[in-house]
Length: 369
Image (cartoon, rainbow, N blue to C red; front, side, top):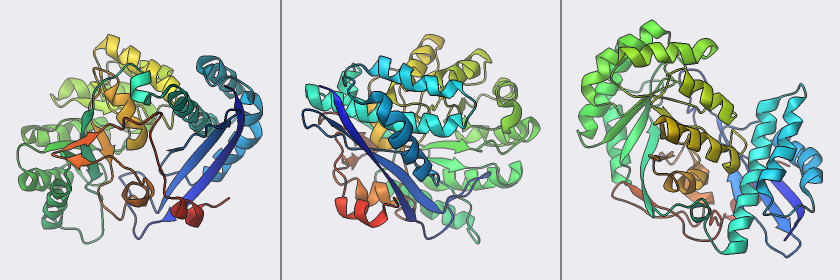
């Protein structure tokens, strides 16, 4: 069964307010849908990416550079296909965007392989778990937001079935953000998973101070605590100074970058993102090296992909989503057959491939090609 053609579709959905963290803003929900067709009539249905205002460039790369190289290849030649398109990164260029385009093609290929064999991607990877705990990303900075508002936000996540929240920090002083986290813990209760994410917002000194302030609050992990420029070494310092587990990896674009974090002793968990780093094929490599090193695997956002990957490995942790209806219209409406959320867990789709059905009306409305 061979690849006949690829259609990539960029989507941009305007949001009503800024859902930004300490170092970035999010005003649009963007993603890229990839429909790869085989000569036997199978069609993939998968989407990748969140804050991708460069989606049109990703689509151009898929249509003009990747599709001609993979056309007529077997859908079961995934490793050979991946190495062939990865070779394009050796030239001087924007490698990050190219790896995002490669991720779209790679995920579409895994979707087709699953559909051809009648197996989910989780099953193709050897996994068997049928449910995973799920947490919402939240705690965003908003003008006028009070500690009481934070409490109501945590309660809202509980009501929609979330097991916990990954809470934004790093945009204020350590003391101010610690008060926000304390309000979240107080409202959520002791059985609610609470992680914090600084998005590379602090120096080592500020990250350590914050960690010491929130250690009594039973924090599951402290994500990307330090500035980008020397993050592995800086996170290693923070990790040595606190008992809170340290998480990073979403900013890496290859398994080699993940290895750098592991070898530096910088992380207890890795949240490498398949949609940022070349797809399922490269995520699997990152997960394997983390397994050997005794490092747990998370996944940055992308629940439609992450559910299959995390359920397939023994050291997989939580699926992440955006439970706030205004943050992610794709999660709320475009993913038409999204599995049920119950008692803090999400069903892992058992249908072939990624098992996605998308609302075609939303696709037509928000496509920007």
